[in-house]
Image (tube, rainbow, N blue to C red; front, side, top):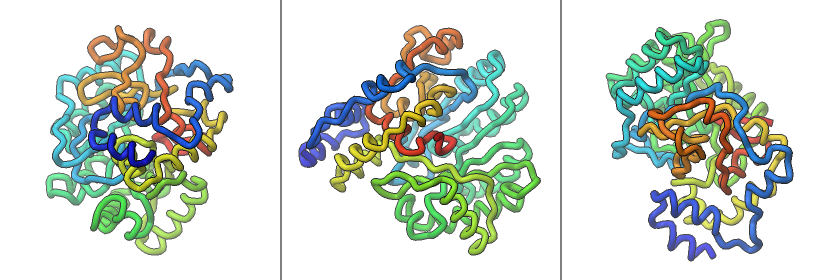
Length: 350
């Protein structure tokens, strides 16, 4: 079984092939379809509740090449959102009073219009701007070293990836030297007031498991991170978000190559939690691709599963009433967001 999947994994950059593996992989026992699991709850068909977050992937270019990256981001990626599409995002957010913009990548800071966009979004009245930073971008080049002060000036909420509070696990997942650069960046953010009690500047960390297992208890891990980062490096932060690795892109490649694919999928299915369904991010979020296409979530974006509304699936044809009447598209990867305590870009949901 694994041998046949490995043979098909040579072209995992193709989203259709990933979906084939997810939906038609050969298991010891056939895994139930996620849609059928939903039918056993009160949440079928899955529909949006309200639009609170406009999550924009401004490009796949990144200064890192992380093993678990579901975006397959890296320095060689050329997909970058244009200023024209960024302007369309601002117009939509302003028109519909969407309170939160969530900027992702790649490294979103590498989009050449990143700073312009943040300032324009604030001018448009956006209540909160989230930037999902890999931290090392701050130390990657001198032109990025003032990012902490730029974030402060614009009251940006910084959500930063840090797989662990020790170098060995972090570097094994994200590359040699990443941990030390991340610590330096965190200290720079703390110096500006980020993560410091009473400053009003929020610094959150994101934990992704380093292997084929679910994240531990979010509250317990947050306590461990806070104690160790404070004692070892005098670093403060606000919250820790635990996020389940979904079997997409590089993490799917890893699962197949390591022989963990079948066990991991079975683990996700057996951990399905109906209570987590109500908090999945696709219910209050629209994900915008670098090219302006609209998706239910960032993971569907990577699998090229646009929203199920042919007349409202791009920035050019954005219609909120039409989008709020849609059925959210699901597939086997959705087990990752509903396993255990659940998982979203804001961490555990149940």
